[in-house]
Image 1 (cartoon, helix red, strand yellow):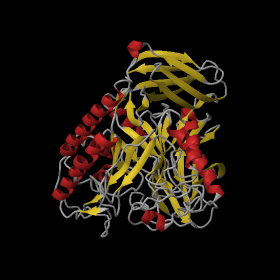
Image 2 (image 1 turned 180 degrees about the vertical axis):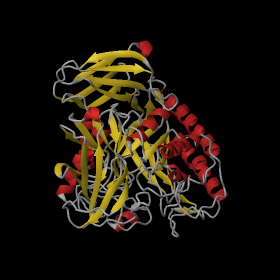
Image 3 (image 1 turned 120 degrees about the horizontal axis):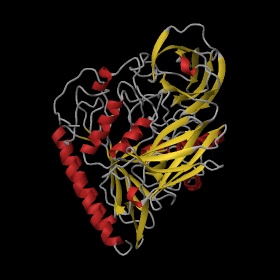
Image 4 (image 1 turned 180 degrees about the horizontal axis):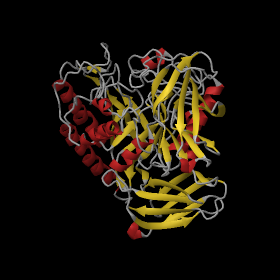
Length: 602
């Protein structure tokens, strides 16, 4: 994909060009989950009946239409209305089932509904879910040829209980328009019988050339198996034992690791009594290599400097929901054209197809756990970026976790996030807490996260209030020169920096603009960004053994005008080739420094 470095482009309507090409009957067509894909499915996105009331009772009339999976706050949904804590969002869709599946079991899948959902089939309550960022599934034992699907949602953006990310009822600066209701795909998967594979965790062991698969089955699992393919060639097969465990060992000649430079993927096919599920996975190894106290980041036994933009994943017309698959591809291809090898997915969980694109394109993903809790104290937010404060994070009220129910829900959502995303090979790290938002007991929660997933790096406290936990000493620096010193026993990460603001007329979401340092021309802005890398990031690699650098940010978002791309993706503020040259220099320098210090180890 080619990118034109445009300096002049005027568009009165701030929306991406991708929206004009979206099929409004099924905006995100195709199977929503490349990691758990059955051949027989039915995408339920598109136009649904809709109404907002103050009652949870199923309404008799639905006078409006909403385009699913877009939140009612967005223009894409056709509603464009803020939702209050008193509101109840009512969705209805009549579903016709193909004759060959009538009377058989089916799985009704919701990829994300914010915040609390009740699901009804023909007026009968079939299931509920709490939490706005994780998928959930409802089992239907005998699906009818025609049924009415209704969903009732309530969303209190300011609730201290559930994860909310960057959503705010008063969006400004770094806080954005809320997302309510159904905001990721809805679909049906048809099953051949009551015996099926419910879910599985897949992990590729780099050293032993083994795919480990741990599956949960419904009904009889005798004879269940998994096959591994490299392109169309079968390279391994195994049966599941009585505990749902299978190991597929590849011959050395069939082993091909995955990396940014060579994103090699394998296809896996799980089978059980006629149920067939397709997935994908890969082999890659993550290491924190120590030498004389300093630690270096290695992937597949080679030093790797993670250079990434911060990516909020917002769109002007559709909020948290990408308007199309092509839109997701555009962002990621632009990222690669700038020479980045990674992306920090900030305070959001993307649709599954976004992660599959990262797998295919070879992009390392630093995945944030979505934050929540009570409103954060303005004093701490204002002062912490400038002054080094020591805040005890078991004083949970100060950082927004005074509510015991909120802490419990965080634990549930943490576990749910790892369950949902742990089989994605492009994810190389988890960010547990960001800038103290909803932070509590970071040491203990890091242990819990490590128990859930010991295969990835953990950034326990990105930015502020370091408690000595996790794999990184993780800094955010915006308001001063970046001067770093080597750290002991953990990897040094600059997990946020930059924030240089350049508002461009015709592409601004708001008359107001937010950023940490403002520029009056595109030339000055671009030169300043390049100088920031050359004069501050590159020396930090040599002197402090910096291993990670995350630039704020990939795109403008609402009032924030500090993106490499404008919010509508119409203008690339940064010439990709200039930044690509810098990123090559960062990577070459890091490899030289790391190999010099670790040569005795490897």
